[in-house]
Image (cartoon, rainbow, N blue to C red):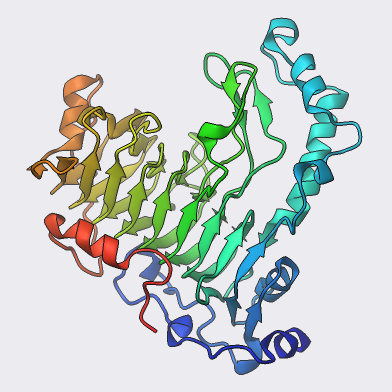
Length: 414
């Protein structure tokens, strides 16, 4: 394989962890055929990548492969939004044309919207990277993927570990005037997108918007100009996924599990485990769930920015969230009844939660009971199932220390 020979010339030794597999009973990702990624790769398919194009070529196809990310890979390769813009696209003209005061509250159509779509396609061709089956993507020291969207579409057996993902931004958000009472901007691109993917392990990564924070975006058409979507969304019948020891911080729409309220391919799927992740000053969707049996245990919720916090666990249509031994650090201005939100769901199990305000005392709480005491209708307190696939269940009081010491890239043993 020419790419392997070229990329690996003079490359560092392959870390032992790069051949790691998801252990038995470590969450839903260990169910079915299990998740081994590219652990069976021969030497010719252990590939070091340093550029966007090298990454895209290395992760393609279903042959077992280990792709080692070295340094920072910028999926936009230095291109600005201006570079992607169609000649007929102009943001100020777009804002003028589709101002609800004159256009009304109907979906944009016409030449300017067509030009926006073409502009978005130009960027998408660069930042979207399709990942094939039987792949391990492993970050070498200080590895970072910036501005990219790794697409796991209808593939199986993928591992992504030890990578810092940053700022998967959309240059051309769509104006949706019927989204909410006053309309909203909606963007494309997650750092990692699972769509119809099976047996996936996301482990020891970080996800953030970096310096391109939502709070610094302008207000257009009386709504924040939203250039970010999710961090690692799991949709369209994806199944058997474990998300462990990751850092998610300073991002709004963090993790969507299930993208539609309409029963279809998601029914009986979307089985996901989240454990030992740190969710620090994120806005919402940690996670938001539809349909799936989702096990949320031993996570550290760090919700100290009351200005950006919306909710944590979203209980959606036919979802069965089982939350156990999670720890919440919160601002005094973030009420306990805000951590659970009802998106049309009817049931959830929660037990073993501890919380504290700042450096105050640690107290036992039940976030679901807090929600039910404040809002109607109640969410039933039994999710209807009990998780069996767990690596371990740590005492809640130990979670902040364990997660802080071990979550994120650079924390895996050499």
